[in-house]
Length: 193
Image 1 (cartoon, helix red, strand yellow):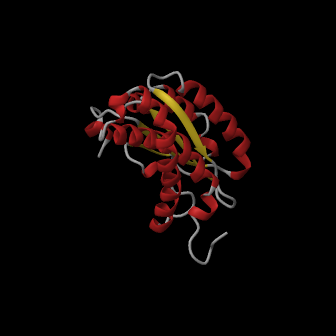
Image 2 (image 1 turned 90 degrees about the horizontal axis):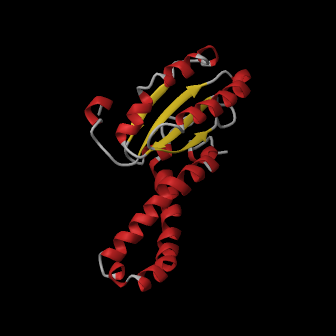
């Protein structure tokens, strides 16, 4: 789906950018990233950013910027600020940047040095995040369901729990967890770290 085709879509989305940076220029790139985040955070709908730094032996940075709606992400993507900022670091990039707007959960598994994380690893990682949350979140929400009885009705209760679990997975847990286990997640059999 092209950006133009999806411009009317709404819902939390991510703007994913990948840069292959010369290894000797990592400090300059890190400083540049701080400036980009400062500018980007002033755009409507900005919700936060996660930076996935290169695994040892690699030079690819992935930056995941969250926006409230597709239109907000598109506004940043097509802004005058973005190409201006990009032009200031083209001399340290080994290839053109790769940028896309994602509306699903694929951004969690943005590849580091392999084409894609193995499916069984994606399943294991996702299960290891969702399972404890499905045990903990309902228990933590019990006081809310007691205070607002209609929220505790069958169907509403599950909807509230699901919404909280998904929000925690998408915005809090998964971006940090994937970054933490990137070495294992993106390794292949015979190359496990």
